[in-house]
Amino acid sequence: MKWTLFGWLWPLDVVVDPLEDAHARSMADLHAHSFVRPWTDGEFHDMLTQPTTFGFVVRELTWGKARILGFVLARGVAGEAEILTITVAPDWQGHGLGRKLMDAVLSKAHRDRIESVFLEVDETNRPALALYRRLGFFQVGGRPDYYRDPSGRKTAALVMRRDLR
Image (cartoon, rainbow, N blue to C red; front, side, top):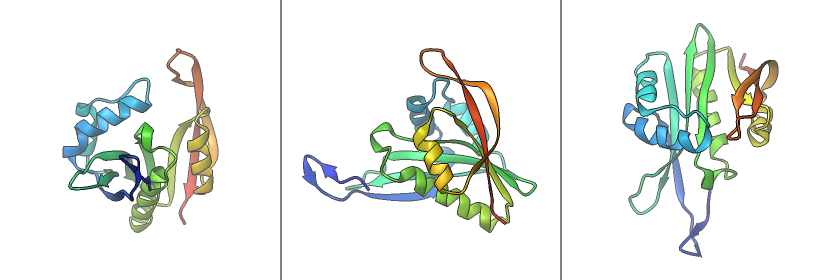
């Protein structure tokens, strides 16, 4: 939870809700702040209409506002789930919102009797790696030169898994 508003200490409430197609534009805007090759609202719309895709959004609730602060998008099929993407607004990173989103996905996966959850993470993304390891994910593979940073340098994707059963 973040605690500043107009320079005063004030609690800002956040809520985690299921993703809806109406979130596609906000998802694309947030994604553009975190990825060199961001996904478009059309791509998000297409994914959200697939029956195997699910996810969650975390929103700020302050004086009637409902700004989207982050989201996670996943797909589940045949006893496995994959985190397709997750992002949190830059000014809200480090406040536990990524953990809230991951907890929501893992809870749904458990309810849906998913046996394993997979994800890919940039090897240079230390905060995300620390979160995933705290959540019980472990590395099972890698993809060399999978990501590019803003300067064009290529970095590896680490493939990680968490078993739920």
